[in-house]
Length: 166
Image 1 (cartoon, rainbow, N blue to C red):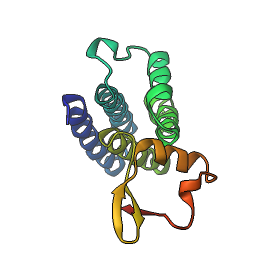
Image 2 (spheres, rainbow, N blue to C red):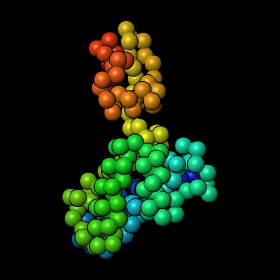
Image 3 (cartoon, helix red, strand yellow):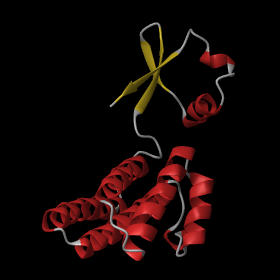
Image 4 (cartoon, helix red, strand yellow):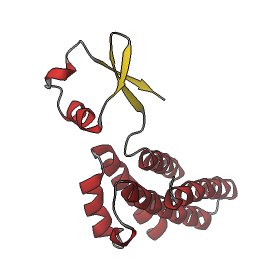
């Protein structure tokens, strides 16, 4: 695990602790600061993911537009959806807008946790195995992308089944 992902996990846990404290103290300023930390955790996780995909340190994004473009190039659909959710609720609403709704914030914090987890695991959240007659083979990312994007491929017949392990 690279330093960006380590930092992202640390910041996420710190932000979640602050969010819990802000809810107990009924202090929306603390919640806003927690959202800021969660946003930085998200961008750090994205940087860690991009490095693991072969991008150089110099090629890491410095603007939101560049992050968006690189996520579209290297990430999968679920990562992009999580990122959009996080940027909307945490970055724009809670941090910049000061709109604090704890129900929505906790949901968005869960999205941050899942995003960090996906960045650690190359974009995937669960180990996916292809089973044929009790023999397990790890599905390649290409085959998994094909499976998720279209159920019409011949290798997805009933002969194969996808098994998710947490």
